[in-house]
Length: 373
Ligand SMILES: Nc1ncnc2c1ncn2[C@@H]1O[C@H](COP(=O)(O)OP(=O)(O)OP(=O)(O)O)[C@@H](O)[C@H]1O
Ligand SMILES: CC(=O)N[C@H]1[C@@H]2OC[C@@H](O2)[C@@H](O)[C@@H]1O[C@H](C)C(=O)O
Image (cartoon, rainbow, N blue to C red; front, side, top):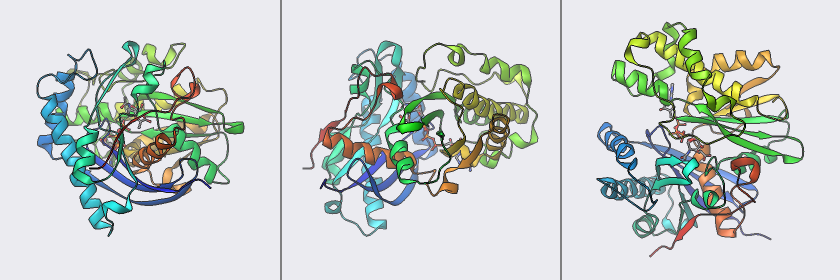
């Protein structure tokens, strides 16, 4: 029998809102148990440092380079993850000895799949030393080295969840609406197809930050006061990303927010919420079959304006949209759970990605290991 391991996944996503932590018991194939989860938000000052880090990362040509303040940022980001792990363990009456491995995503500061360059800052050895737990990190690189897009990596976990959830009307598509959105199609015989589907919340976040000084449009309160501006929406939805013959993964900066003169605050937020929903449906048009069910995770599912638009666009195609919770999953912690799952797969040398999920030449494992000291 294969060993069931207890893993903690750590995700700092493209929204740069904080660290999601989740515990998972798994053998790397079956999800034996989804455990507790928590979020540790970044303060405004640290978010600003991360944003500055994205600017400095543009100078990177080799993935181990850390120009400007990136070196210090990597260290501080890692120490914040270590603190998050320690607090999480304490909150759940656990000790380091109870955990077999940490799956550490780090923070993507640069993602250029066309140049086979993806950079996640995060020091695995430092995290292992600080927490006393083995770490698997840098899980995107090997996929890229084998011709993949380096993203998305969550599909293997979506497939495991779908296997354990009897009665989900198929074909099912998992949608993650984070800073960027991505989707995973699970068809007959576990056919797995996945790709980034477009801008998620990042345009909305940048828009309301610039024009209202707030980090995100909580509950879609601003968007629901506005009207969709069709010309502005079309500017995004006619981007070559949606019509290209092959799917490519996105960098946070691939889509820029509108100029201040393009819209008022509410109309801008409303239009961008529509773009988020319409981008998903448009991208789903590249799938071999129309989905019957969309299961939505990520922070975007908490914006009712996005969810309403997504539901009405899906309905036209005969599909139903469900928040992850409606089918018993946790939409906030799914990515962190996935990183726990992937870490255990990496320990077993099992594939993390497949030709259908990242375009990699053959299924490959990945990740680097750092042993506890
Ligand atoms: N209550 C809410 N109402 C509206 N939007 C919300 C709410 N909570 C979170 N969000 C949105 O979700 C975003 C965070 O989503 P999430 O944590 O899934 O992203 P991420 O993991 O950083 O991104 P990615 O999946 O691209 O790596 C926030 O920046 C915000 O835009
Ligand atoms: C390079 C990178 O960090 N990509 C992220 C980003 O955020 C969402 C989307 O773009 C996805 O491709 C990926 O994260 C998810 C968790 C993944 O790899 O599955």
